[in-house]
Image (tube, rainbow, N blue to C red; front, side, top):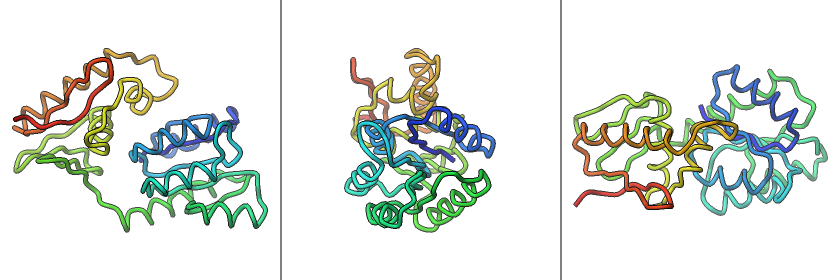
Length: 224
């Protein structure tokens, strides 16, 4: 389960990240609303935990932008603002749930379980592109009758590429979203996993290719 955490209080963000990771969530954490929007627009997350009072763009603007761009990821507003008008504004902006600080870890996890259960009722469990299908539960990539299991990082890269068909995804974006924002991973780490994925596409006899766009990144294409 992949969570995007958007919180500018570093101590609180670190505590939230620890709680989520202890409950087997994969967490990307960013500190301002614009970065939160950029990450969320990839559509790769299962749930978003979003503060309201953020630098560059507040949480209300983030969620409104996401919904205008047809990103339906379940979103929990987690904030110190507890007025009825703020709650109404948040829910009317497109948030799925609203929690006020302070909170208990058990309460947070209960809200997230409820949100992800709700998402499971209305969303697909696979991604498809051309002749490829990616199972979001088993991490299996298949083409026709052939199937192969992906490692977590291979799966994460494949999910990003297949969620954004036709778009060029930079190495920096892949590093941030697959390895995390505080990683020592470099371009050669991305290149290695792209090589692994290309080998698996060839094994599957897929018509899909991963194109290298010089000085820009990667995108999915189709062999002639």
